[in-house]
Length: 243
Image (cartoon, rainbow, N blue to C red; front, top):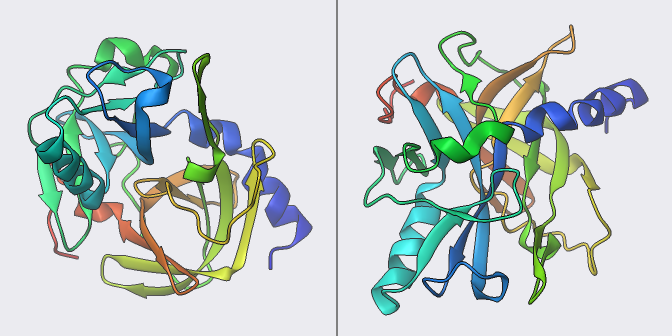
């Protein structure tokens, strides 16, 4: 587990991480009303030397396509810090890779709504190499923290502090038994499964207190969280499965 100093560092930077991420969700109706929300995940915002991107998991996009096959009215939308959902009007990702489980999207349709969010600059701060025992932190919008009613929808998040247990190429693994979590609100039941964290941007904590984006959470299974290293993102928004 982490020292008290490391825990304080992880959760003091919560606000910094929040500016680069948010909840992405499906609506089972063309009307983006709270009670129409049927599933959610997490997105990250990054900027390359060529364009601004929204990044989430490939399997999130795939699940939306399945929903839309059965329901042509289904929509995919995001929350960007306001009190209203914004539809992500895209027909296809710019880049997608099923093996790395990432998809990137143009933000042209939502850019005007991003004034309460920031784009992490990959061209100014390229993702560093990481090694075992490096300390990472991320925020995921877990489904168990989502609350919907006629009055509105609230997407709670969980902040994770974790230690890298394995690095293999563009794959990064962390052991959940050595993970610390903190919820931004009391949830009815804190499940050991954290559905909704897919797509969360993950940051390395440097000694000077700064954050460096290193990857995106893609899955959780058998007590492990898997991430894909951000080095796979090309400047044009496509994805390369090359380390």
